[in-house]
View 1 (cartoon, helix red, strand yellow):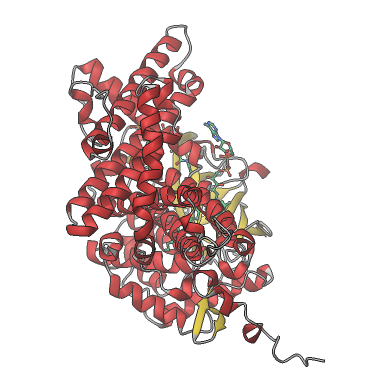
View 2: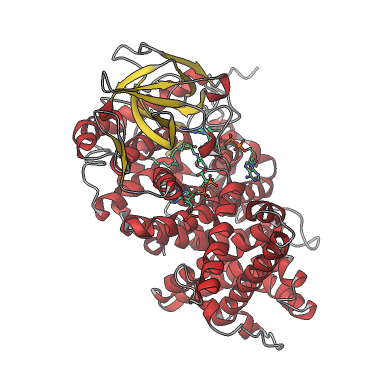
Length: 631
Ligand SMILES: CCCCCCCCCCCCC/C=C/C(=O)SCCNC(=O)CCNC(=O)[C@H](O)C(C)(C)COP(=O)(O)OP(=O)(O)OC[C@H]1O[C@@H](n2cnc3c(N)ncnc32)[C@H](O)[C@@H]1OP(=O)(O)O
Ligand SMILES: Cc1cc2nc3c(=O)[nH]c(=O)nc-3n(C[C@H](O)[C@H](O)[C@H](O)COP(=O)(O)OP(=O)(O)OC[C@H]3O[C@@H](n4cnc5c(N)ncnc54)[C@H](O)[C@@H]3O)c2cc1C
């Protein structure tokens, strides 16, 4: 089961887990013969930031980043992702700081740069001889990248670009790495050539010299203490007419000739903008799996605890009940476990889609990664909260990890694209495809939307347990919801436009239907991927995966009012589904330990209460306690 979940590079993962578990740079606690690895969240912010950098150089010395940017084969890229995932399980700040350097700074050079940039920057980036950051967001504009105010002009007499921060709201903000350690940045800016705004472009700019001093025209300030992720030094940057060589324009999409002519292979400004946004998809693809992995840490800790913690007896002469023997506790945690399995398979599928994509697939990866990043990070936070509560007071203890993970990973719903804004991208793309197909009399094609070309699914009235557990029924129900919502949204937008409002205004006021559609699309794709994962399994594993798939879908339907609101299910059918969920939970209960151990997260990286929590709280393990003199 672990091989199916991780999908690749299990040996690399275990090697890296062991490397960290053997180093005092990562180990936070020792209990008997066990070590536990976690950052020290009690450290002052500055020390946390320096400790993150120290860990990065430890990993560099151990060859962890070798060929990360120079070898972009699918095999090597998957190995990298395995490394990122393991580092993210240890600490979000460590993975984010590396993510900014390798995925955003390095990834932008790979995808938006050309050979001259690759030759000059990739090797020194891998060797950490430069430390890159990614300056897209401004104080005044984060989601709306097209609205950023940094302005770059061109001086043909010196063949230089001049980058300027024209006002305070244009200061680059939240830039990971900028506050202390970064030496260079990718800066996103409007490009003005001969007074014409050619739109957002990306430039390489040095911000610190080898001694850490700001470069000419650069001002930097700290974003200050955050509610989490303080191991990353987020900073603010002002550019005071900073001059950079013409060659520093990342010119895969467009260029400026030495005499100042703007040239681009993409004439449509929207499409050009889309290409400049494409590096963000890599981060979203990564976040989809990282968010899922944090849910795993929470669930493995909380469910292992629920298999040893007892509370109340059913009758006087009975032992107290295990928490996980309570149907209510099963219902709180096992649907989340099932959804986490579903998200794992979906995130794994997206990684491979992303790595194998051709340029024309960029939009598809954008749409799917937007939906997955948003929904999986929301799921992760919801799961961590439920797991925290399921552990009672122990859930609030830092050494048990769950509480801190909520704070450290909260940012995932915002950075790399605000979740609500990204979900709009999903519904906007679907509506656009639907409208184009209908107006041209063409069939829907791509992203599994072909189901819209066939007849509307008909739900049988008799929904017994066998039907409810049949993946064909489940897929038909999710397709029915997706089709229904798309038709409703299309009709509503057209009705609003007929009153004279614009498409944007119509979409704005149809936001709820749009949100529902984005969720429906994402969950339908997830089910199709889960079905494919199930096909790879045999025997008892196939049976358990079937239970997980059913619980993931039926619990989602049970919690979603849209099915009743728009008549995709009758009240009677909805009640049958409502009753089936606890039954499936009870059937999954005996497999719980196997299912969480299949996450492949070694003991040092889970909360202490996942193991012998009496021993870890015993007097002999009270840190400094046994040395006290007992009067
Ligand atoms: C190494 C260790 C790894 C560890 C892993 C940790 C996590 C990894 C993450 C790394 C670290 C994270 C630190 C945080 C960094 C940041 O936060 S960076 C800044 C992030 N900012 C954003 O994401 C900005 C969000 N906004 C946008 O993306 C865009 O503004 C938009 C909202 C998507 C576009 O809006 P709008 O102006 O309305 O333009 P549209 O008309 O919608 O788009 C024009 C066309 O472009 C297409 N498009 C848009 N984005 C993309 C894309 N990414 N890829 C491909 N195509 C794109 C869009 O679909 C439109 O196409 P058409 O409709 O066909 O014209
Ligand atoms: C810890 C951290 C690290 C970061 N690292 C980096 C980095 O390294 N580099 C970088 O460039 N950026 C970075 N960011 C910035 C991040 O990408 C932005 O915060 C994010 O894009 C959201 O932009 P914003 O904060 O301006 O929020 P806004 O875009 O102002 O959004 C605020 C609210 O308005 C809502 N909203 C916005 N637009 C719409 C709309 N059209 N319809 C409905 N609601 C809307 C959003 O849903 C949100 O709730 C980081 C941020 C944080 C917190």
